[in-house]
Image (cartoon, rainbow, N blue to C red; front, side):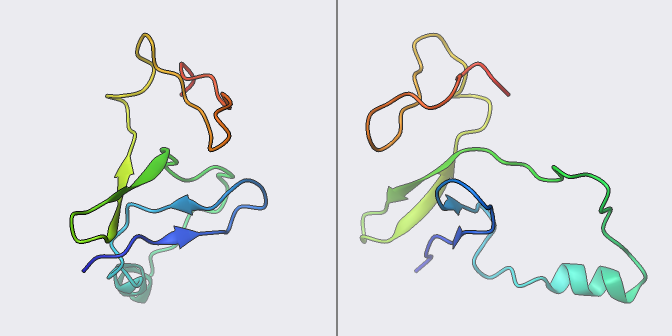
Length: 93
């Protein structure tokens, strides 16, 4: 059974959920580093940050669902938080 992974490494805001598989433990990064690969650390926003919500599976487990480009910034779409208040300009990247 797959469980959704949540992370709290941002200094503000709520937890966000990753689309990375739970089984991902960094082995690919370690293998690349063993051959001399490095991360570029000059980009302060080096990430892909789509909004992700959790959907309940039939067995009760949760799975992440990303909102990429197909369902955002469409006419009539309004993004609201748990309190029902709009929190973002949906037309923004």
